[in-house]
Image 1 (spheres, rainbow, N blue to C red):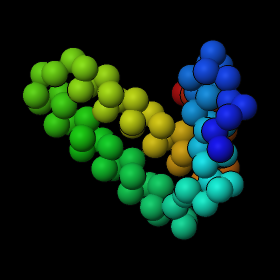
Image 2: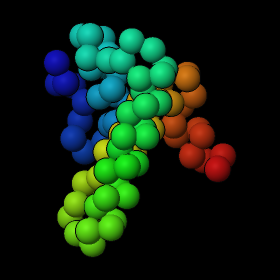
Image 3: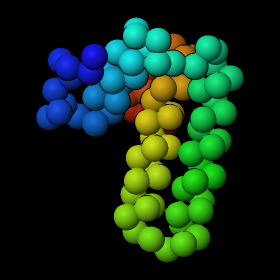
Length: 87
């Protein structure tokens, strides 16, 4: 299902393509509220990893937060790349 997304692609572009492909096969939230709640869940896990002081866990959880944000951007039809450039 996720074939065709080059592993060498820039991470933000790769995340966008992976979430699009997953959505097309039904692996998705029913609405924006689920995607937004996932951001909160991942942020809480990042907070926990920061508190533990585990560098590997922090990196993994930050990646999960970023992926959740890219997915949320897809739901609100705002390209993550554009939003990040404007920030």
